[in-house]
Length: 116
Picture: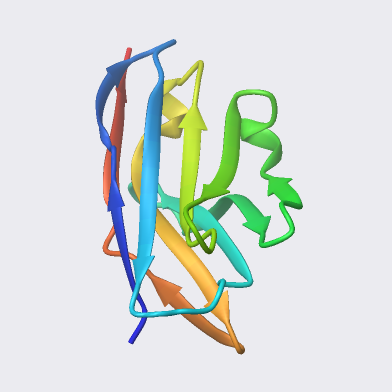
């Protein structure tokens, strides 16, 4: 059973930075695509950024130029999200997501709060 464990959320002021991490366990293969989604209060969950095992990245327009996604670890099953120039619109619960053989896996979420 694949498990995703996130860390790195917290409270930061506008303009600050945070780095989220997500480590996958229970698997010996490289996950195809890993990514981060977020859900703000009262809004639907949305894709923030994703990265393939070949390091092809995709970003939501709202975070381009501010966030950077990357993968690491021996089989590249750890995904990071470096978030810079944070603003209040970035507040939300951030979920790690990974796909393998057509199955989607989700972490439990880590809260990011940006204060003005």
